Amino acid sequence: MDQQPDPFVREQETVEQIRGGRRRIDAELSKVIVGQSDVVEQMLITLFAGGHCLVTGAPGLAKTLLVRSIAQIFDLKFQRIQFTPDLMPADITGTEILDQSSDGHRRLQFVKGPIFGNVILADEINRTPPKTQSALLEAMQEHQVTVAGTRYQLDEPFFVLATQNPIEMEGTYPLPEAQLDRFMFNVLIDYLPENDEVAVVTQTTSRRPEPIQPLFTGDDVRRFHDVVQRVPIAEEVVRYAVRLSAATRPGREGTPAFINDWVAWGAGTRAAQHLVLGAKARALLAGRTLAAADDIRALVHPALRHRVLLGYRAEAEGISVEQVVDRLLATVPPPVAR
Image (cartoon, rainbow, N blue to C red; front, side):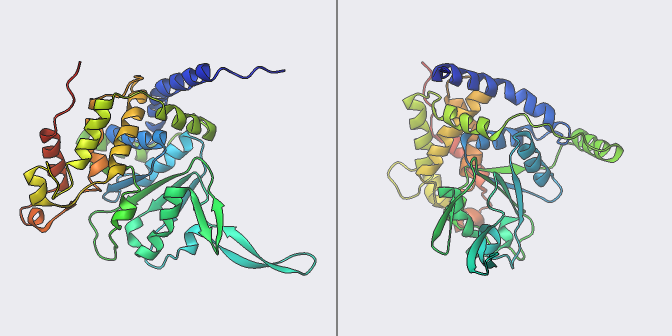
């Protein structure tokens, strides 16, 4: 009889696989992506932690290319959904059609939509009405869709990586807070420095890009999720994440005055959960087996920028969410190192 591998040994092997994986991932992505190291790290953390990611950036900054390349590295089924004003929920989840079998009997048959994949690129998600946006809610939270009263489980692993353009406001529909909260991070892609932009232009106009080589499988990703959850983290670090999240809620005892002045709605408990999970994944990617307060601090901006809703006073004074989060980090003290 074959002996089953020791769970501890298998876990250690997975940790070593994650440690060495970041360097190999960067090498593969460098074939098509120049710079954007922070963006890549935040997206990898999202995938390793089993979350969803909202990517915000102007057109032409390789948002779609980056998502597709990451899907290829993890050898996952990639599905792209172009969100438009006339897109319907059935265009995402699938629909039932009347099918006639060889014996002449007719029956309804469910035809799966593009949501049945591993990595779903929801391109320009804010260009479709809320009714269609809501088709993603059940899929993102429960990893299932319900059509005509029947539930269909989605393939695992399952990630939604949505993009939105912050510039063009005509013909767009702001994402409701309930859907924004489903995203683990809101990652900002900015313009590249001049040297990196020169490298991109030179690289894309002189030769065809090399193909991306798969490095991991879907089974690897599922093991990564399990290992990330088991990374140890001190109680005071978890408490720090909770305090950062709670400090964004106006009108509560102990809330900083600037939050009461500038914020209309703060982050919920899911923000602290995602901060802790992200900190664990970041520690593993950096070769550490213990999540620290620095990991929390490094992820506060992507974890909170889409969960903090500014009030009219902040808008009148020209205060941005980034400024609020910066001041929050300066106000809430981190745990003292022992």
